[in-house]
Image 1 (tube, rainbow, N blue to C red):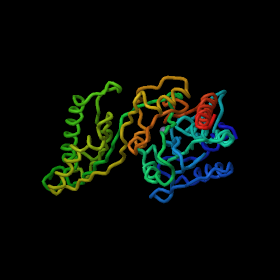
Image 2: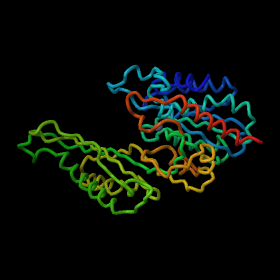
Image 3: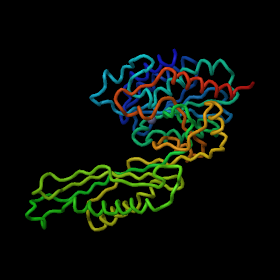
Image 4: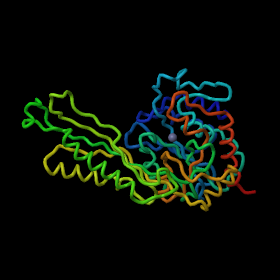
Length: 375
Ligand SMILES: [Zn+2]
């Protein structure tokens, strides 16, 4: 099967983030096993979804990880011109949910298996395919925890998020949380008998805005736009009517960290307000939604040089989106982003990847394999 044919199969599985992924995992496992590649399926604690890990070449030597996520964001936009889960060719462009982000990369990796098997790999290539990346990298930590039993300490990880096949050495980290405050309903004419959840949330919001403003004047890293860590409240809901004391208010907030700052620590001043509300007897809860660290690979790192040599293009200093690369780096593995397609097409209707982009990625992976083989 060529990469486009494999992509057609991968897109046909509506592996939407937050849903069971057994069907796509089974198909990938069967494909790899049909090429005599040993596969480990690693179920997550949810019980109905799994990461997948496979190795080509000698397991006991250090090699490179090719990392991609199997989940996709939902495809409910009205602007889709056809079924998002049926791959559709328009000239050179292959349309469907996940074609750029990032089943195109998975397809190129899988299509390279016969060539990789034909050459004798001196060092291994590992495929590490994760679930629920789009929910804030929820799946891959479970794979990383098992890594020591799966392979020798790797030389590096290449995360195939869409980057136009340019190496990318940095992105910000991010942590997100949901705040929930429960009050007591009542008629607005008797506020003394109710507990106003929105008024209590105002204390939390004030601290978040204060923190966001302080971050602008905090540590700066000119690699990024903006050069500082940031925070925002993204959603808030609460209240039923003007004359009812609101009994519930829920807000989601996130912080984005430059390298050197821990995303979760940025949220701490806001988290502390929840603690003080709870100490006053308020029913206030804090639910962490996601947390992944920033990525920062030095320009002269061997992995950056390797990717530049294979792509023939200088690496980019930074991108604005986050990836699993930060988590690989945190696990002590040098990491870089390099994958086919364009992030501007991701999470949008009529997402697509071009055939030449798939071919370029496959050539990159096969060259990586050859570079890892004896001359
Ligand atoms: Zn992605």
